[in-house]
Image 1 (tube, helix red, strand yellow):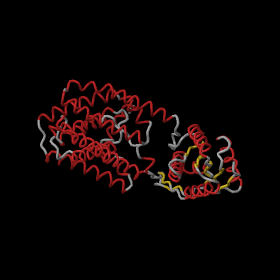
Image 2: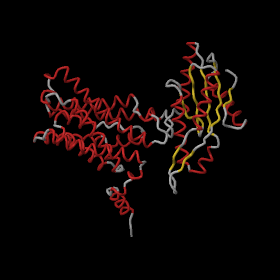
Image 3: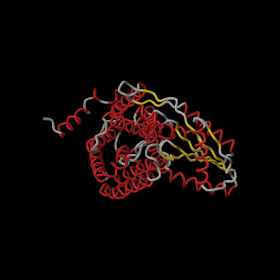
Amino acid sequence: MVTPRDRTTASSLSVLVPTRWDLWSLRPRALAYVLVVDALALAVIVLGFVWRPASAHDWVVGGLLFLGAAVHAEAARHIERVRISRTDRPFIDLKSMWTFAGLLLMHLGPALVLVTVTFAYWWIRNEQHPPPHRWIFSWATVVLGTGAAALVLVDFDRAALLTSAAGPRGLLLIAGAAVARWTVNHGLVVGIILLLSSSPTVRRHLASPSDTLLGLGALALGAALAVLAAASPWLVPILLVPVIMLHRGVLVDQFRQAARTDPKTGLANGAAWAEIAAKELARARRIGSGLAVLMVDLDNFKAVNDAHGHLAGDEVLRAVAATLAAEVRAYDAVGRFGGEEFVVLLSGVDTAAAARTADRLRLRIRAIDVTVPGVGGPSHIRGLTASVGCVASPTAAGTVDELVGAADGALYEAKRAGRDRVVTAPPA
């Protein structure tokens, strides 16, 4: 008899067999991208040891840093699990402080070994065991980022880098190394996300400014850790306290953001959009500017769910959300109103400009092509149409609810007139 534990064990062992990895089902371009990045990472490790052989001191320092990274990982394990489950953007790993400190304290080869064993420990201790090919790719991006950072530091004496003798140049070199590591690591991750996305838009997958500061902040902590370790290693554990508090602060921010975000599309939810719209309405009144509200509703969306399933329907909603966000200006606001209905706030436009934007959005939705997996192979969802209700308020009169109500009434007229069209309500 096969028990549930036996099945779990068999499943865990199967992920270790490369021929069974989902890697081989990737699109050809994405597969080639992953394999090239992985191969380059292996080459960088070999070159790291050829360039400068490791010393006994390197291995002692690497062992101590790995011990600190393991303690850090265990202390923040629950927080990290929640953080990973609440983001669809490249994950910002705060434990990078240990591997960046390793680069500043050791030669490149041992520093890359530290990256490898730290990643291996993280994979073993992760309850969900991420697919090995994803783990390997993430490891490869960090290895290449670390290699890029090492190139920034190549012409400077490492022994003096963490002392006052380094001066302003040392500060600039460490800052440059951190930026190089972040840029290469993050850029490679964004690259594969865009290759795998059915509706690639850079804005959706790039880290937010706060995420970027968080990633660079972790590297800055790594530099502080290296300085502290070089001056007085026994004081290093003190850094764990602010780092764990930083983890908790990040988690609170993610919960706050999640309360304002639609989980399926990443857009503002109805309440958050209404709050943004109310502020923009007040601002428009102060400066004497107009604004407009568009209600966008997908036509016959139930047929998509019936024909392809609800998961495919969710992919369509994400593709439409990405299209709407990409087609309006950065200071306009797009939200998911509910179901297959979206709402758009356009600032500083009159009725004619709002109608032109509404029609452009309608045509862009028509051009969406979503690829979804199926039993007989992937299929395409094309030919989507949308009805749009539009209302402009040249004097920013009325309330948000009144503008939404007018746009919703125009949307109803568009549906009743045959769908796939824009209807504009009289100016509010």
